[in-house]
Image 1 (cartoon, chains in turn red, brown):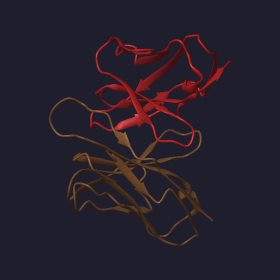
Image 2 (cartoon, chains in turn brown, orange; image 1 turned 180 degrees about the horizontal axis):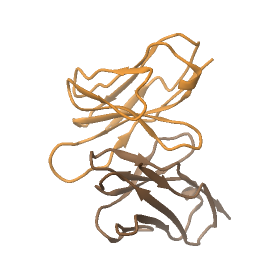
Image 3 (cartoon, each protein chain N blue to C red; image 1 turned 60 degrees about the vertical axis):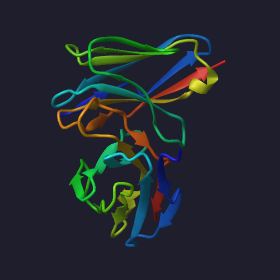
Length: 109
Length: 115
């Protein structure tokens, strides 16, 4: 079957670094997406990885290992506004997204 | 630029009632999607469309219907509302077609309660 696993909740301190992990099993693979979702709002796109390695975008980076079925989202210099849920989604052979339940990130001052 | 617009934002229905959730996009995207999001669960695909006149079932289509008469609009119909359909519904769109994979853009959601 198809499955995406990520931690339910994480807590970090303002100014610190946090890594949110995601493991995936999809029928075929056409890439791995990360989205951010603030409470009561729509998901917004953060990153897309289809090749192994690290993609850096400002304070946010995303890593993919296809052989391990593993990805992580790295957030640096955490700000209070980064408090949100982070959704991992794998794209299968039919180009459909399989979504994880999301990781709720709590930032403490 | 409006992007993906969903109406209504909130709605309370009685069991057995019907309603249509509206979704329109102004980005000329070919692909459109309907998801539901339940607490503690990932987004589940209800229906999707790869272009006007073409629709297909997703993972959880039972109790819903869709149509795609234009590129811009992709309404979702609930015929006989049931408490299990209480959820937040998101419409999304992406360019689709040939070329590199592109992210989906989401509307603000419709919060639906069935009582």
